[in-house]
Length: 318
Ligand SMILES: [Zn+2]
Image (cartoon, rainbow, N blue to C red; front, top):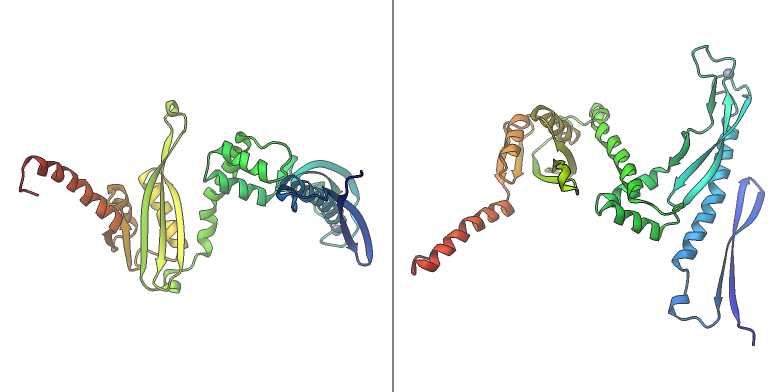
């Protein structure tokens, strides 16, 4: 007896020019009619193939369109001569897509100093990582070991090939390098203390990041904190503790980005670490300093422990 089958063909209907429609089959999903729980609905491998197939259709069409649009000179509108194509790989959450990017000769109206040719889309040499892929990779690499992040993302997403721990590390380092540069560019457009106004509470704490290979002995301290304005607005910040002057400047910039200056009336909550207090005195000299409840409780607990031990031997004391 023939086994009854259910078939779904997924077609992509593209309309890249008004009224011009093309159809492409991007997936075919089959099930035997007798479905158990495991056969109900889309499976992960099917969803991965489906999104990858969709991505493989969308990306080249977009790159070709950008190449077409850039063919006119921005200054004079003259049609630019092509200078061939170059190949690149677009690495995305939904797979690696090979693309051909158009190169264009510079317009004769441009000066001598200008480059002789340019690419229609800056995809770099070889491969480019989609911003969203860089974001998701760095986000999970910040929570779990690189190898675990690689395994998780490879399992859930149709990434091109298996993702390795070293790839996750390198991508995360690049994202980190960009973030580390960001504050200087940001300070120009930060709100002034007067603009935000009022009282603020600043919470500060530090923690160590250690190299997993102990022998290498590399570790550094990260200071993280939060600024809460009286009106409820919140800003988070973090920076690595390096030399005293650099650290104080990083703290000053983080506060400035949250609209807090040296004269802003502030309450600073911290754990009693001498280094954090020094940092606060340098940058927010007039702030009221409060040892936060959790750290205060921990100190009482430290004091109570020997006292309890003492009580065992000297009955009636405790
Ligand atoms: Zn021109």
